[in-house]
Image (tube, rainbow, N blue to C red):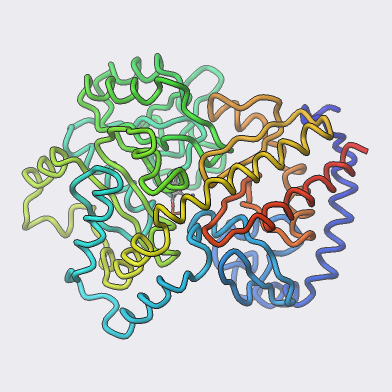
Length: 454
Ligand code: PMP
């Protein structure tokens, strides 16, 4: 085959046409709702990226609960996407729903703290080891604010990121390296305020020498990285990588920010706790409030103290860190319930073995069919990719992508009643996911691969 994926591209096209026809016939009401929505929303979706789902139109959801949802046509799905981590708790966990309902009836947003705020901050301190917390409405905002603080504290202009990273819609992060190793805008970057080369340095994940080179310019305010990359497939850190990141950032006075928005799937305190990492700042979002908009960043006492000493109280509302609804009563109630009753250590004890079961199931199918792909896993998250060995860098991971093949696999999963995480081949397991759900995916994956290699 010409694609490097080990399967015939013509076969992918033929199977995709067949699966699209099955999908369209089965989801006529979703199709009609989409037709109507096109008149009032570009692409017929409330946010542009929702148009990118596999299939002729996106599913329209009627109800969701636990690890399942039902579309407008009444078809039930096992949800392994879980709102791309926003619903890692399972959909509408009863404890969070009760807390949100209680708080919604008692005041939603006040620009004043509630008791829940300190409870949530204390809980996050016990999990991540960082003593000072602030709250936002999204992980994106947490990252944006932290990048500002880092520039403010260090007086340095640049952020260092990993190639092919994703940290939300944060301007500084839409940068990549061209063939000559120059920083250029990432493909598809919409309206950058300044060329990313002015704000951003880029290294390949796991490349310690490159980190050292960039930090020694003295221009890097912060390193912003996921402890393991999860947005270009999963790229795990090699032994020693995090130790090197920590000692180099310390040596160069650069703020080390770990974005644990997705890597929270590794355990109750993310990879920070699981691997005993020592970041200056951790950012979080998505699942923290069972899907109710919220985000957070935790700081060392030293970072928090430097911020306090350098930001005048009189200016604290207009400095670029804030948000009227940030830290609101509703999202804090959701976070408290989520941390204390949903994403508990016990819940993770059930989720992690399911992650292993999913990965072993997929690996078994790949071996049976002799397809040269691999599976990677991080706790309750796992992913397969179209290359024989796991990538060391985001660039390697991106190079293994094949959009038509990915689209087919998503579509055939949908037609088997399974929703995967879009734009790569990832599954996330919630406290409500069952072994039967996992095995259903394994069986469906085996069926489509058998047809692909036939
Ligand atoms: N950080 C990481 C690691 C993410 O994966 C994402 C979203 N995929 C974000 C931040 C941004 O989250 P949000 O869009 O909810 O702000």
